[in-house]
Length: 166
Length: 437
Image (cartoon, rainbow over all chains, first blue to last red; front, side, top):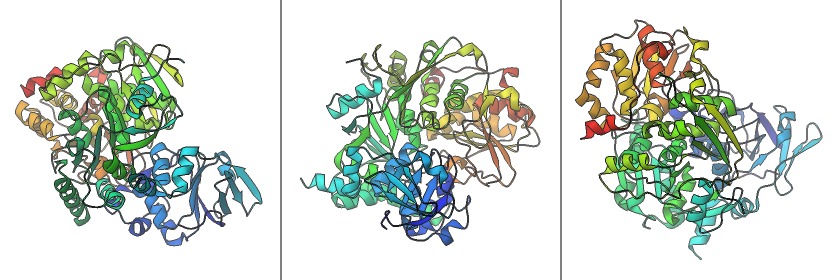
């Protein structure tokens, strides 16, 4: 996964972007990140999959990733090379899926100041989102200690492997 | 310390800690479930974490279903089904196949879930199990795959939002109307990270098949779980379903001095039938506000309202009648037993006589994107749980959500119709039981 502290293009979405809009259900017969990436936001924003570049960010409003439990949604963003997701708030299952996969996510109430195409980056430890285009920065919620441990260990799979080998 | 909510009690019990809202715990899982969409990714995780030949934490409490793209609507779907069959057989887990029904219907019918259980399902509507007093919650495939290996999973202990309803529902008003109103009031993300808890005299009087509707749609306000405190009605229901004695634990309720995030109170008499307008479940309005909206398709089914009582209610309304000429109706029973009871009791005949199409049991167009997909500008009235843009087909199509009674009444006139103008029954849990016996 690319380094979220490196600046990348912001792809800005609105409120209540549900998992059907991130990965329409007709495509989730595949579990392959690269294939899923070719259909990410296909109905909502058809140009996304062709133009997104490794190191870009997804920025959204309230309740990003609501709806189904499909891990195909965060996985499609991993496949697309997205460095991280910045949203004003997340739906619960998307948030935990992203953490489990090791996809950086930050809850950032000021994310609505970011415009599509702005260059942004994440400081995960400090809980700060930088907007390099506008020369601004926005506070984000730091992850609780337990989740930081999970992320530091590389996600739930690595955490579980380590635990099983104890 | 103050008392605990049911959510706090259950996660305390399963984690062996004094769990309070906001704590992170690792809790022991009682039942784990995945289906044909989420299973294959979970199997990859399991193999990666623990090795392909390792044992499941509890094969007898692990259930895999084939319900979302069933029967297979393409080669990839068929391959996914085979992956589910192979993994289940290799590890000795329970497996339900094409036509057996939707995971949430099957797990309840077959008695896999008991009050007080911690159930994880790789499906967001796993909140359904709260209708019988279990902590049911939806998780992703990585969660499920690791839990299959360890029998444990991490949880943030949720705050609880209580919905208290007193009084008697009017004729034509059902649990579906209650939950659409709750979602409309608190919003699509109003209960995010929290447990919903439904109580009061109205809820206590609801049969189990209606309580399951409330819990099922807790996720549509962001809920992590959705509880109805189990009672003797719950035990009766489970004993009838399983033919086994189910012990009653009288501590499975929130303490009187438990701390809630908020309590929302309602009078049942005040509630009109509700319809959620496109394209979010939170757009709930009284049916009178959208009466007369012309529709193209009616969809009866899903893990929310595809049970026998739901479909029978629609059949009662259509008995001896025909669908309005401008509409088509797709019926998808939630389980194979529902399908078979429809045959036995004449419900099948009534519906096909009226002009409905009846599919094999499963998720149908709700999540499968098959068996009744909507075209551009189609308007659908559904007993389903979600009406997101493009959920059942074209991004230009529109889906309205309502109760089976509202869908049945609307089928007669080809437009959204107030069910209070037609005769509707309120079935208790014995209707299904009578067919069983």
